[in-house]
Length: 412
Image: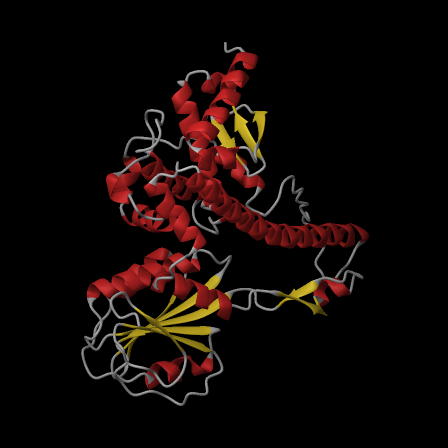
């Protein structure tokens, strides 16, 4: 049985040592309030508290305590707590730890049994997550997360102590009762709170990003800023957007998954509840690929993997997948990850390139955005379209309309 007071002294001493030896991490750790916490892991954080479990912490060497504290603040600096979206929790936790441990292993002593693979060095948690999804063999490997990611649940809806209210079964909406009115009122209040907290989460992520930049300036001024860490923080301060980031950014901008306070939800208005209507319940996206032979298999695989990754950050989506050379060769709706695999296996075509058939196909049910992978050398439709168009191109051709993203090697 560990002595709680003696462990707390070691914890405080470790935080002081971080300030003296690794000021970047010590500066960030001082924003967190120490709090005892029972868990199967020695530490955890939610962005407000630095939780530690005395019994587990007592088994670590002093230098290992410094290492796990550095691990915690890197989760915050890199925004892992807020970036999971709809990704599978276990895989995301693993990916986040793989990313951080690869950064810290040369600068800190970390506990035995951590998640580390050399192939994941210099990769983001998102990139690692995708690789874990596609390489089941990695999931059976040794190692576990260093820390308790369960406390992240306090922040994933954007805040702490969010008390959700279940609406219960109740009556149907066309037969209002006092019980259903009360349940709907509670549900609307809870939903409004979640929306507010989600906005707060974005602020928290940005706040920790700024703190990381400030901590970097302090460490650099003291001449105690490791190059590997400097590179990571430099990307936070001056992000260089690659085609994946631009694609994600553009699709987010095109999405109308928002709430309109000027147009109340009629289902709730009949009960005297003024609540915003949803402008869009899901992201409707069309994804087209040029199968005329101008796009390599490697580029196609990479493109579809990134599309799948982006869609996982939305609460719901409807993805229409089309393949076209001079005519549409495949047209299917993606609901699961396996649908992307089926789409890839069924691709065919090697004729000329004509973009018009795809636009004609989706005209009956227009998406919010069409993303088209191509070299751009083909026949284009009329530029006036009722939806956004993003061209992802492996050439320098300028299309007559839409936004353009160049694949690596073709940036201008």
